[in-house]
Image 1 (spheres, one colour):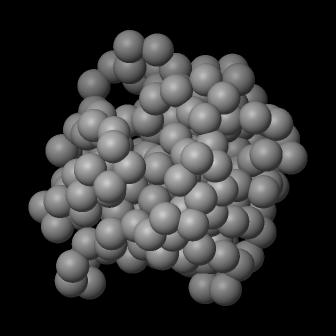
Image 2 (cartoon, helix red, strand yellow; image 1 turned 180 degrees about the vertical axis):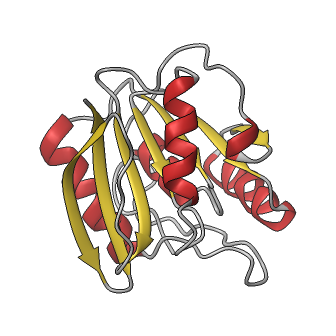
Length: 178
């Protein structure tokens, strides 16, 4: 795994040890960021959340491309260690919330982009997005990406699907608040 573009382009990412997490593959990440770039243009100055963060690959990719901030939410210890190691590698101190996405409280402000890569075939991303929306983590201009298994459909009340793409075993779904 490596950073695809931006300031840290080509630099490797540390992945969590064990099989408790499934890092987003480079090809899938490249497709996702291409989808987002065609819609938003630049990542400069954006506030991003990497929820179900795993290695933090999505958040670090956004930071490399100019995002101002990224909140990493993860509960697995090995994944948290990988996020910290990646932060050290890139010379940043990641803003980490070591908890379940479902235990987050009210947001201080809506995020511009939320990345979610929950365990496949669980519906956890949809449940989390419903709760995050009610707690103010999303706003009218937010973009939400949920990575699921390629056969898993995403539907969350109050959110419209902007695009959906299958990439290998993954499906990337971009949503916007209605």
